[in-house]
Image (tube, rainbow, N blue to C red; front, side, top):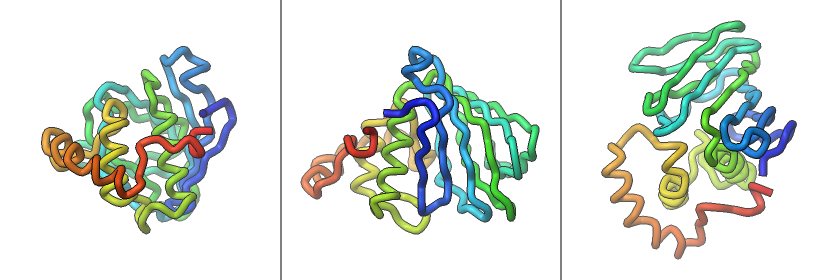
Length: 183
């Protein structure tokens, strides 16, 4: 469970997150974090949040953002708002650490999704780009569908495909929730 000042890290991507305000602190209205991106990090998979609004303020360094088919470079002091259902990805292509204040409204179960992703990375259950195997992804995508969706293939295809893969995923030992990762 996330709590104020808890820090989670992804050793594969070099990203770390410090929770500033959690869902519990704000009665579900807001999740606020400070995220650090390692220099020369890899662009993550394009994704969107079906019901959440995000606000990013760059505190230090630069952050690249792919949004609506264009790549933008944000610098310290820049702010970006991303409405629900807007496909995006962000990473640090610069040579120094990037630090960002990151707000998600409403919080929903985003903190658990982030803790799970970081936990999988710490356990060595992701590839060089920080992505879990497709069978793990199938369970995560179904469980966290209200907070995170990959941009492609279309959601209807994902729903069908991941639904078919879910039983096989469970047989292979994968889970949607790992209690060790969410304390």
